Image (tube, rainbow, N blue to C red; front, side, top):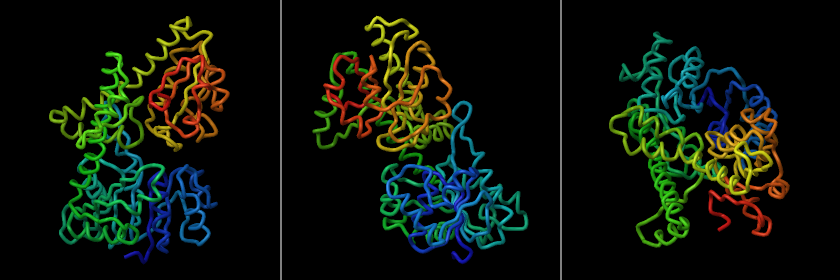
Length: 420
């Protein structure tokens, strides 16, 4: 099945670890990415993202000649599509990256290939790829219109946790959905080479919906925790103590509140379900809106703290330390990060304040925050020392080491409950 190799299109937080997992089985891979810097780094055996154990795996794969990267899509026996699927406009799915990947694959097809979509996608996206390919390659048969196609298509969504990808990419069960049962089986052959968890076969649309359901379930639970936090604050209670006690019930497991929801999955995927069935997805929409509103609540707490300190409405004379920019603890991933959004808005809405951003996993501010006269990237101890308001946004390990003595005399807003 793999005689012409495997091509992975998209070398980000999912595509690159997938390359590393496959090369550990001795398979030869070509990685494809539109970013020349990413391509150059990988070909040099370096990893342009922070993920435990990934750097060693990529360095070894490149040294053995099992992994190389390019901006051009090669001929291959298997194509894995792992490109972004953001939303646009009023939370409508943006499939332009998947479309571009499909267009790059089409000229390389000769018949016999397997095309697997790993990108989290709205229901029907794998079918759409088959239809696009049929338009681009009318000389070949595709599974949406032929029982015996020349090219097989399937969807196998990733379900790994950043920070544990190089463990979970092997151990987690995988859902493989084909446009036909044969498509699913052919795609499953690839995953059986490295996945020790169970391979669960289904149809493509069900696989797409299953992944969206996983993340929407988590989003609804986080929204419950965030709403509970606001209720408890209004009533003068400690929400973390309430949750701790409630979770002693054997069938209750409430998540912890926070400043919002980030990352490419939970902050995005529920909108794909809403877009697919807007009249029915009422609870899922409400949860998404609850979590999207959370950053503004945090910003309101900062402005209230500044008012208590006697600072002006534009923040004049105030220094705010924003601890964390990533969307979750101990990683460098800033995608859809509420911490990043809050820091951005504080810098914009309080132009006379000094905003010190602290993110131990990056060396430069992201482009969206660069060029601000009142915003700089700082080191944690200095930022806390200088700050009037210390805003904890991400529970990174270095922040957990701060003591109450370090925070003495500061207005502290702890959105993660680590300094209770």
